[in-house]
Image 1: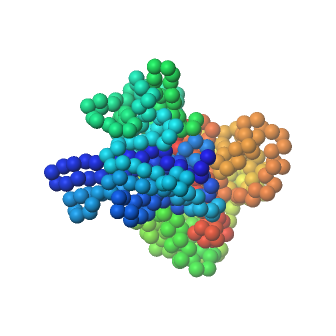
Image 2: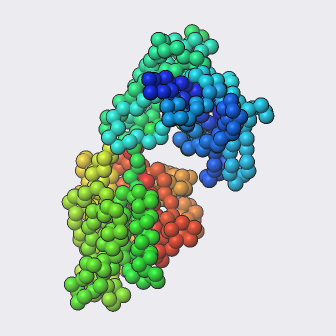
Image 3: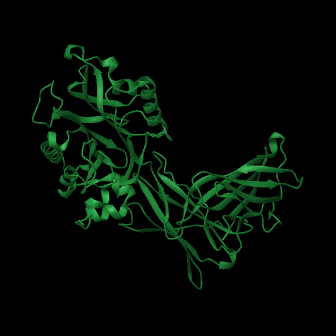
Length: 489
């Protein structure tokens, strides 16, 4: 199979009093050979002049391919000639090399006004591949192309808005009055309402059989944006180029569209214990966001002999029921092991209420066991049927696989979300079958920063990555920081 291939071409002409318009749409299948790639359609009209039309990524196609689309609209009314009949070829460029599909050197052809043409041998194809469900969007339009030789009797969408706990069926409609050349086009509209995501597959019913397009067994999915949570220990004003690093943190929050940020070692000048809000690190970072987020912070103790040191939560959504409390035995403002945790409840659209805790606990030998126990009991006391998830976020000062880590995961209540996203086999050994030897498999895992989510949560982690590295936003602390995305189960 070619590394790049054309699945369907749409070449339609619309004529109005103001002039004519030609629409060219190329739907492509591209092998996922590399993360960074450039996909183009080179095309020419009857004048023989070649043009390059860049394609855009749409979403995954099965396990190893991606959907890409190139789209061009030409208007005759503004003095530009329509393309008419089109010759074209496809090009993929990535680190693995340059790949072409030019029909064996003859190029592909698309006649003006030919409607939708499917690739040879392709009988059924979804044409409206769109991975994102916009905020507030209530309906999703589906467009399906069917080979006319199939003599389709019906095209039915099998879909769900609750991850297949319930399945619905919606029939597509074909406008028979529309003179369609090429493939038949069937359409339907699905109601999204307040669903986070819609998943669907397509069934074409013919006199002889049923033909399915279920995206290579993966089904099609269109969803809202996931909830993105970032955790980072700021290192309490101990960094060189500190102001620049604050800006880099703000840049990452903006560019990654982070929804919730949990910060530790948030410092502000001691000022005889009164503090100095203008020097508060979380406040400075927040003011560099456009617009600023909702912020809740509190301090625990004197840090580095000159700062009020604490923790903070920043949220794009309003913070409700905010509260802070000591989880340590000591409440001494001059004691480094006086540890305070802050929490807030966030009502996330399409997900519900989520309790978020930002914590910086002591090392095992300095009181972790008691501190985590108090944190866990506090979180439990706030958990009820209205809370969809509880996230314990921050610097826990326990190495992965250590005795402190075992205390957290062996309680059979909270799961390590970075592990869930990136180490499925190891995650299963720890949280599903409780393999007695799992600890030895984590000897090279030096994390002490975590997001622990309760097992009864209605959410699941979709992705997790290290954020502040030399090859990304640079090192901004003595901690790397993590970004994780969550979606409903």
